[in-house]
Image 1 (spheres, one colour):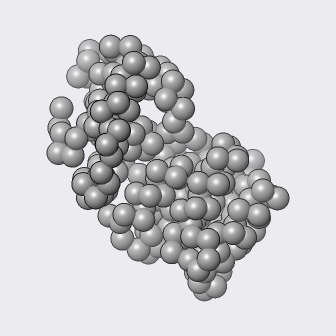
Image 2: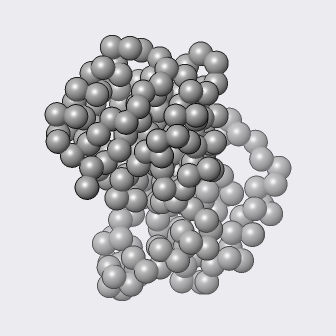
Image 3: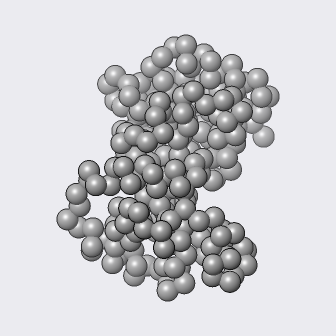
Length: 224
């Protein structure tokens, strides 16, 4: 089945380049393009893409605002943030808004295609370790007087075992690494991860890591 993609970037040449790369695969169809966030929101409402490639710095409605509205209205539509730098407060804001990860604008064609395939299947497109670097960079800039109460609220939603798994997810460990540390099977860990995401209304592991750091469940530099 074809993966339906919308490209949102204010640079015409980049959009043309992305379209050529993606349509050459034979498995990705570019169903629309936009040059600003407002038109991207309207376009996604109309064509209901599987994946949106979203630039964050655009005139008018920016990509962060657009991402938040698109993901709120269509949970089946995944957003990948396009960025120039791999550690960037705008990228962090995009992840908070509901994006499933980010790719660099100068990524190789194969990396871009792999990212789209990955999020179309419901997963995230960046290693948790990369997310942690981003959060380590940005969290100190975001004071939150309600952090302790939010942390307690998250903890109440989870069982003791789920809290342990959640903490290990947030430090960047894979299902295999979590299984080895807790002497569980990977299948069991996968079930725990699925339940955690469902209970906390999270799309994927990226949002789990963001929530863990935002609430103080994990703190920058915590290696548990």
